[in-house]
Amino acid sequence: MNTLTNARPGHTGTAPASAPLLSVRNLTIDAGPKEDPVRLVQDFSLEMRPGDRVALVGESGSGKSVTARSIMRLDPDFRLSGSVEFQGQDLLALSEKQMVGVRGHRIGMVFQDPMGALNPLMTVGDQVMEPLRIAGVPRAEAARRAKAVLEELGVVNAEARMRAYPHEFSGGMRQRVVLAMALISDPSLIIADEPTTALDVRVQEQVLTLMDKVSKERGLAVLLITHDLGTVAGFTDRVAVMYSGRKVDEGTVDTLFAPPAPPKTHGQLQAVPRIDQTVPRLLTIAGAPPHPANRPTGCAFNPRCPKAFDLCTREVPELRPAPDGGVVACHLYPLAGEETAA
Image (cartoon, rainbow, N blue to C red; front, side, top):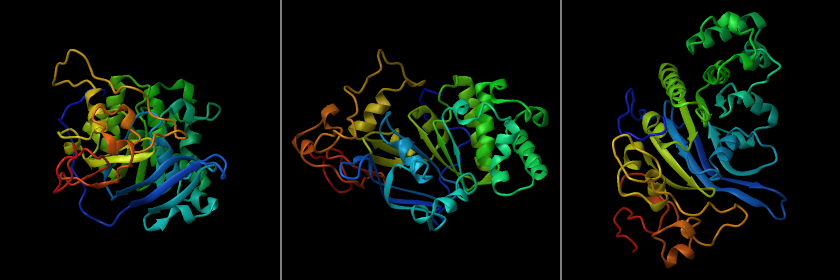
């Protein structure tokens, strides 16, 4: 699903107000030596409630996958600061042993490369059962639940297929297995990191339709990491845009696809084909994102921005409320009650 449309069949809208399920506050991620760290992500904040569907989008290297993995604390070499509260508990304050009870149980994760995420030497059934077996569930009960979740995800003849190995499955079926591993412990939140990468358009649609169905039936919150704005339009309610380790824009899906938009977000929208418009040539964003160790002064996007002016080269824009109810970090964007800077 790599084309844009404003139609979102089956879309449920924003979840009702409730206590936050996930509350990320000023998450900062450093790598490398302590005396000369490389800042991968700076002051990232995000809030999700039960049933929310939020997309985290950005170019490759923007920090979206690093952020998602850090919520789960999957990279022990990264130094994390800020807070990541899940169901009222700060995950950054937990021991590694305590995190084992969170990963795969309260929070499930779907990785972008199902073949790389699966162990080629283990049967599919053993891998789907593994989260339950680690939690001490007897093998017979784990097998019963594994069969049930595979059937729920449309795996035909699930009991026999549990004895197969990953290479005996197609790409789409492997992604169903990875999704089954994430769902088997009945989590409250699923983090899906590029779940449709390397799948053809038809299989992408099948996987997203399946995720849509299962998340509705189970009342799951979903944090979708992607660069595909067509997927965002069809699946999520809210979008956060990242660039060079910072969140630069956040709002509802409807406001993301409606003008005006900050130059960074507008550039991404212009670079994606639409099924409801015909254009002679897609526009591209000139240049490349900066390396985390060599960001420009001021707004990190200013060397690539066609609307940059003097202030953009001197000051990093702060996230502030925008007229559409979201937040935006851009010196040009007209903020609530203000006029444009240019």
